[in-house]
Image (cartoon, rainbow, N blue to C red):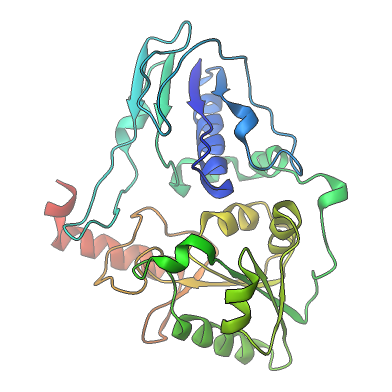
Length: 297
């Protein structure tokens, strides 16, 4: 069995990343899976996840590493973390994960799309939103959803997306439909209202917010994994705009933070309001990695 753990300090997106990557890995390897502290999952109210086999024993600090492994677990593996000289997380897909043996506890961010995309249809079933929480009220052709992340992120100037990103994204969406009705879904209504005084700004609960993003037709996202897993399970999305370089949109000279946060079906805009497809971003980043290979040495 492969064991992962749900931590209090993880947001919903990070919890889903760990859940999905662990389950896909175990499905591919024909291993059993289980989760320590699955009761800490922030989506119990709107998702019924299968957390696998019971995990007995094991303990350690928030985020790991364990001080004691669960019963029957022999090994521990932590996803390789790579940092830019400026401290930014530029982690790329950890190929050593493929070598992880059965009976191992794992920790990490695990946000590499290449590890999970081949089981996208199954993931949509695993992460199915409960019918009573699945909101389609704003799932309309003439509505563009803006998923704005505020809260503690607004205190991190490197991470928090500035006003220009949102203005550029809105203006680009208006070239698709000049009559779009923009609705902002956010965890921080007061701050979002300052950014978007002319738009409707809403926060319901985490499940309803997630489902509104999932069921959007047109979507502008922040650099949050919350929106990614909504998009991954969507049957309605037609066009997405996202910040190029993800967590370092504000300062990057070509690196992505994290390095594996380039996602299919997303279109990206940079600080100069240039538009890029997923394929263009992947090719450009491959060239950047070749020229700056020392960063991942």
